[in-house]
Length: 377
Image 1 (cartoon, rainbow, N blue to C red):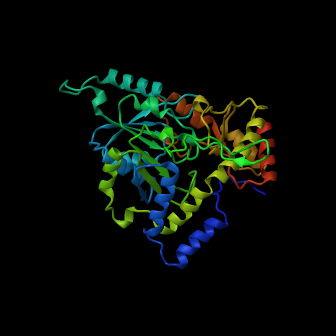
Image 2: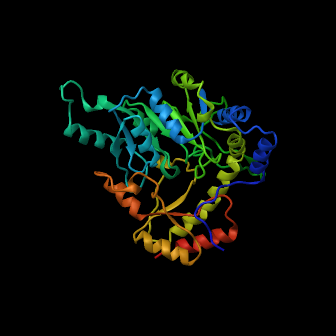
Image 3: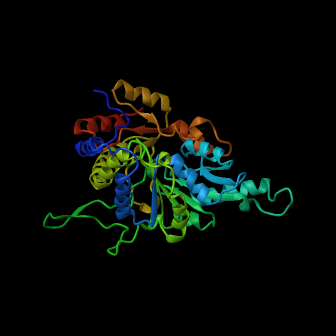
């Protein structure tokens, strides 16, 4: 039987929640949308949030809240989602592409500084000679590519507003459950202390986007939460509180997302178990994988390898074994075409493969994928 590269983790609880919303004929934005925001707030401890129809709407509102002006630059990774470009175009903003490194697919402070220095060297002042290039940068959009978490604290020190996209890294701060000597299970230590403070990693950004699309860590079938962690930034988002329903997340989607939040720990544990098997198998290959920064907890959104051989050959090899693999960066900006001065990103687009990696994989399927990894050409 064929193993698809991706499958949403939808179980009976999610189905029942959506069915209940349909039976009650409450499918537009309303009560369940508010419940979703409260459920997310219990986990993330944000100050204020909006439940929106899409991540694109969330990014548009975040940049608008920052008072971004036409012609200003937004720093983004070449491996960001393609929709970022459309949002920037709609706001008449310009992308300033940054490269990544071969061992880590997200932006680093060093790569951002290098990009700014190179751009400044080309144009150190505007035509009036009055302002530096830095003054034209209105924001950094920090995408957590493949679920890896960048060093937001170091990047925030550059002094630019940061919009963080955690759509594929939700749960990276949640530690696995542990057993004591008596076999009792308890939650492992998290970045939330007993007082209920938020994850430390989210405190350095003005706004955070948590996408709820089909392939995000949590899904509502489509949508996003846009939130702020402090009162000052939250006051900017409150200006959008009166958005028309057409921009807001529907209850039928919110019902699904509420259950996804509640089932998150269970799914994270399952992902960790599967990832350990795949990681062990990968030790027997010559291919490499990305490494989390500073031993950060990884949510295991995906299992990817940077190949020493051709991507096409590996995908064809897996297909013969009824296992579907995918170019990890096919739907990124660089995946749509090479980006000038982003040589590493361009190379990773041609060499990084994504394996099936989701909680509903059965034991026999995990074994088949593990054998495939060990025997890759």
